[in-house]
Length: 396
Image 1 (cartoon, rainbow, N blue to C red):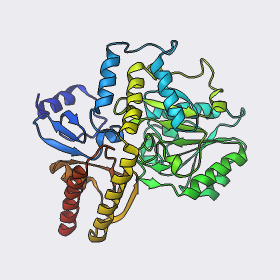
Image 2 (image 1 turned 180 degrees about the vertical axis):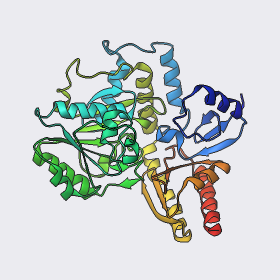
Image 3 (image 1 turned 135 degrees about the vertical axis):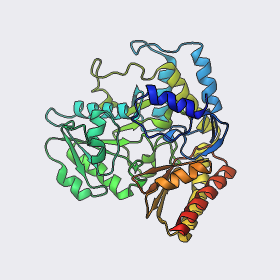
């Protein structure tokens, strides 16, 4: 089928809750994808950040193929070696926590919310989150998301969520009362525009949590598993959370989510209190293991630092010449280019030239390229982006 035929099929049978580009993708390899007509695109936003290793990473593909022939799924009333091994690898690379497995970031956040309430005294239920945050689309995660545009049409939300200004420790302190159970924060707000938390902000949250007996949750759904050049973004800050949520890149492109919790907190989640039917299934677990192995065997944490430096050099230099660019924000391979104008037209113009990027918060171009991106691909993509921005600036 060609792209138009697939689009017609969707129009007839698929709910239209996504804004889709009029392109049907059929194949991917590394940082390239191809559409049904055979056109190739350079993907600087692979899988909304889920394809951390690029499209179809060989170790992940091979691990999944092997596991498909052995055991696809069994319920969590049984033990499987891949799930236990995956939990061990994640724990050893983080803060020694214990894992609850699920299928998505929103599910991981839901588990964190439930555990935070279960682990604090009865009557403490409020959770503080921050303006511009994004924690997911299920009702608990949506209620934690402090952006009104995502709430429209779904009120009333889950009670107990309190929103504080991003970066304002005094406001957080004023928001804490005897009913507060936890604080949830993204070390880098991804959907919120690649806003990077100042070190003193996260350290201050840790202090407030300790002083008031609160659970500190880091939502690392987008920042985790090496995206920032460390296994987890909290490792840049010398601040250790009590609970951490992971998803997106954790399975190298397959669906998977994880909540990691310090052992003393994890003990509060007893049998029957929470579950996920497909969470930690053998396919996802093997993919998660292969993702970690790929990152380590190919030295990709170090590669992120190299790529990040190249992006910073190219984009900050571009910002000095292009009047459309307000600011460039980069941590590892989380890249935000804030514009003075809406960015949707820039995204479309890049697509027309074979480059896939994203725009969030209306004016922030968001790039989440793969850790396996080559120097040549980086230059190719930056050249296209620069051409588009300069042409739009000239026309304006």
